[in-house]
Length: 291
Image (cartoon, rainbow, N blue to C red):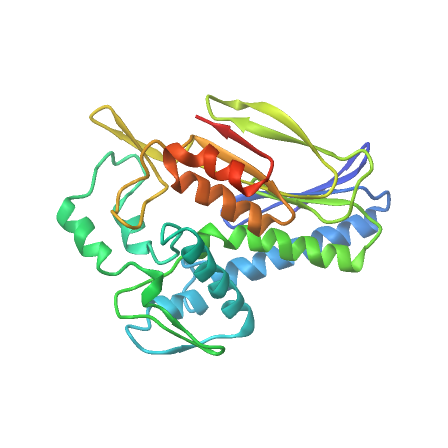
């Protein structure tokens, strides 16, 4: 963790959830800034350790290794799974956290290989949130299914951190930025300046937004993609056919009251492919789309 003074207060930074994380604090007291940074770090790490599918023994690991057995869950896990279920329903089965078997096939690591149709068909047999049964205290998934909270976990961590900071320091404006997913819970009169990355020029900000209060999230495949035989395949997978979404934007940034909603709308618009802009216009939110 690092803490640096700025003209407007302090900038805190650390790494969590495979992302650079920042906390912009409009506060003059270094001791308070350090307390705020510690709180943000602890909450980000708590959520990462609880909900990352790569950490052995946590609740997601237990779900993914239950092999058809019912798994007990706590209220927070139920909350996230219920939200994931709503995303699945609202997106007409396109936003599906159970698409792990497909994600395992499509490797965006420089291998430049398209999976075989047979492998995709086999993976599709184990995809579909509709097969997951939720109660207030348990989850049942058929053997072979697995979930990944990557599409909503970081946004949830941003909102939770922002909420905790606002509860403890209700008069201090803070901007929480976890890997480009952002929330500002307490209004700042002159706002915070936020740069949106230009997918064509990754070292340049394409636009500057002023956020006084609210949240934004970005979804895209500017960095995670493969090219095979002249065709580009982005990492946003359509769980209905097992292939990357056709004609999806390079990136979508959405402003919304909270980060989870912004992230949901950004991802859902990516899944709409060529119809991303039409979808966002219907939602009545501010957005920026790059193609």
